[in-house]
Length: 471
Image (cartoon, rainbow, N blue to C red; front, side, top):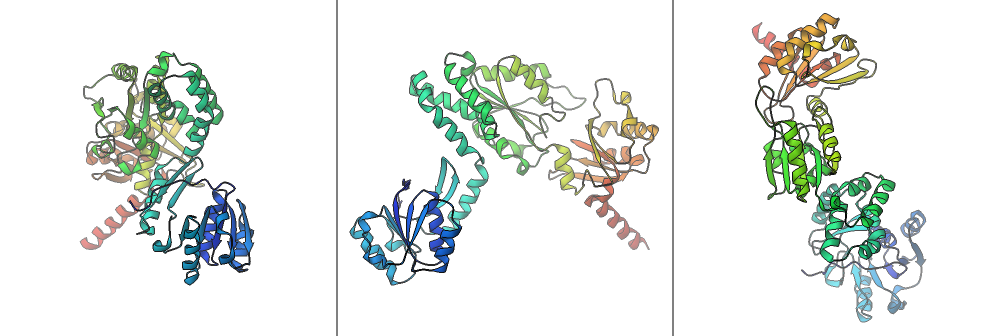
């Protein structure tokens, strides 16, 4: 490691900037964002004048004098970007006064370098490659920016405001560390990262004073939506929950690819069940979630799609809250949205499809009890979950209620996965399509917008090709 990562306090500090080009203007913005008072030796450059005029952060003064005549002992740091022999002279003057100096693109003259920076307020991440590859540093910064929540700096600021009070109330380093871990990983952190600052601040103040609360010693349950199957559709928050989990209770619809994104040493417990097959009951799942949380574990309940879209997430949320367990809900890409997007199927379309209905075919009293007259409007797109085995009943109910038998329809099975199968046809053909699609999680989509989908157009193109070959 050639360069030691150090965060330098430049608030109100005097920094010399030498040079006239775009590189110098870029460094000005960085220095001002850190609160430095910049003396820019740019000899009246138009770029310098515009950069100072456009900048609203910090302070900058344009200096026409020769920078070599300046009192370098008055500077906290020096940055030079002339690109000529003047860089050598500026660096030598800085060295002679033991002032840190950065010469742009000249490692041999620099005693410090500028890393690629991820700025989230109180949270700052610096990525450096020792000057060997600035492009690589920028790429790494982009990856980190994608992983860090946008409000993580604001969460750090909130915790900083209560740090002293928490230290007074709670004795013992381990106890304090565990407290802040619960704050970050639990509902308080979720509220702050969601922008609900008043809720987060009130809950944090209450949690600090409630030092002996047994609830504070318990773990947290995250109800996490895994999306329709493709691991790349996991939300950032879902990925973070998986990587922090001690134990994961997952449904059968959750793919191995998604489980591979979880923390390696997390315990994985299958609790899924498929229609018509034996499996663990919902009451037993609820009890196992609560028991794991009472042991102080970080618990993830991982569900296909979104927890609150036919995933029984609401039932689990109610049970855990009544049991005094903290719960965080992490939404996921529901199957209808994810699968329709991959199929190029717009579920709504202006002046053509103005209503969208999600429904489940697996009603407790049977699909035959459904009032299909609610869904006969030609401007309604109907998405039916768990409907493959009920496709004939869906067809008969809709047509009997008045929906046109020729309405475009699609069967989307194992959507977004490698073995996905998408079929299109008419409403009166939907039972045949469902039978042909095979087993797996599937959706029935009924509505005129199906005819606007990529899969409809592709099927039509294949039909034309077959007809041409037969001719």
